[in-house]
Image (cartoon, rainbow, N blue to C red):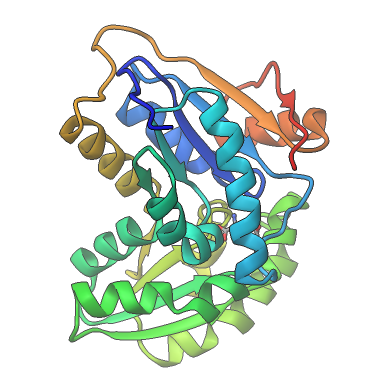
Length: 270
Ligand code: DGL
């Protein structure tokens, strides 16, 4: 059945867990009139080590729930889900879908002087989705990809600015430093929280790319092009949901959003 969404319908956003809230933060800044519905798949996080088929199945289940909430567009606020499921979702959903990889690659292509590092989960790096996007946008750039699987658990543990995290970062980023990268794409939703540690480990002047702001800009342009922008002057709301442990989600979500979180719904999927 084809849907005909209204401009006042909410935007649906999802991630494997909390990290996508960095994108919610940017969407609220860029599109304050929009209602947002966010689902974090905390029951099945992390997506990073999982197979593409499994991540696609999770994305399908989440999008079915988001569509049942009447969303007019979907933002895949997870790099791993974007790498494995974006094309599939664009081909199958009746609403427009935005991912985080093209926007991140675009911002990196604008910033780089020729040497780009990409860090992400094992799944994102194995997919080479950033390498492909950068090859199209900045074909002359040298791209060095590096999986950083320990970063997500360190952030979830709250060790965002901790000596252990810095030691791990030195190990992971050594090949990027050796290659002389001038720009590093934070190709995972959790990594913007590690920016101070990463900046200490990388040579001074290295540009860190967080795709959240660029993703919000792309979402705004897409809604405008489809006549789906919410009327200016209204104040959009934020509905948060998680597939497990909503109370723990609420506590950590406040850190990602930089604001207190009152309520997180529990949603059972599948
Ligand atoms: N949200 C994931 C991403 O951006 C990181 C966490 C996970 O592995 O599920 O790739």
